[in-house]
Image 1: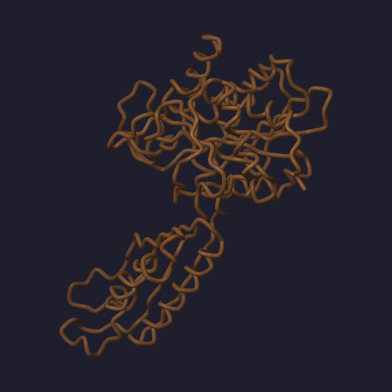
Image 2: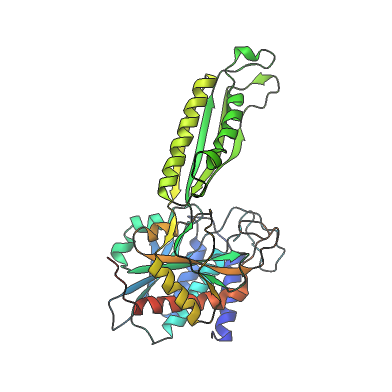
Length: 387
């Protein structure tokens, strides 16, 4: 059971961070705030890892094992509409995904572990920047995270609206999707709208392309293998009496495994080539892969579930994967581990993740901090084959 003073401290931390959000790669004040709290706790840390990232290390003699606990710090370019006293004071920026709560609860776990002598080994507290852009974890790794801060396993959580508050879902296998951004430019030949036969109609080609691409998931992919292709932006001319010369389309794709991702990418390319030939236009396609699928190692998921049970939290090992994406996947591609969901409570309309009405549920901070501390202790005591 977390002491009331620590709960209230975490609430204050979380609300401060919520009121002062910073976008990916700009987490300067957030990083300063985390560093100040770690200094107060007497925990050594290194700053500017992969941007504004911080890695703190707590070590107790008696074991050479090391476990990583990660929280993300960045906010989103969304105008907050909650009306809360602790609402964002930064115009057009808000914590609409709960990273304020993730950071506050990892600081709470740091406090718990610092005051607990019932463990041995090393716990790395990873405060990661730029998750929303899918580049923060990768940047930390490229700057030598695993070489400078060795870990045997890693754990993280994401709050989850729609799951009962404080319930923990620890699921083995894929839990979140691989992501990629799609950019398409169609170039044809402009003409007077009254003489369309003189054009090569890029906009008509875009119409065919739009509907065909969004049929990939239902017709070109095994229905048992989840995939999404969503075209979400279209830019073209603004002259009513002209067939435009060029059209730009943009969107995203998500899959739960690499094989399906490769199949979808090949299908997008095939469709673009076919429509370009049929319509007499040029289509330039760019697919920018952002993150890998987030896949929980079965053994790590079991440790995560045991930790949930140890703190008295309700736990489930059954929850459908999400086609949202998470750059914690880059850490898990290098070392085994698990990302769990901790219920944020009822998923109210207009208060979903990435919505202007969203707010992290402060009542789950004690559960989240307790689980983070306990999963580190459970993992340090375990002796899995990590080869």
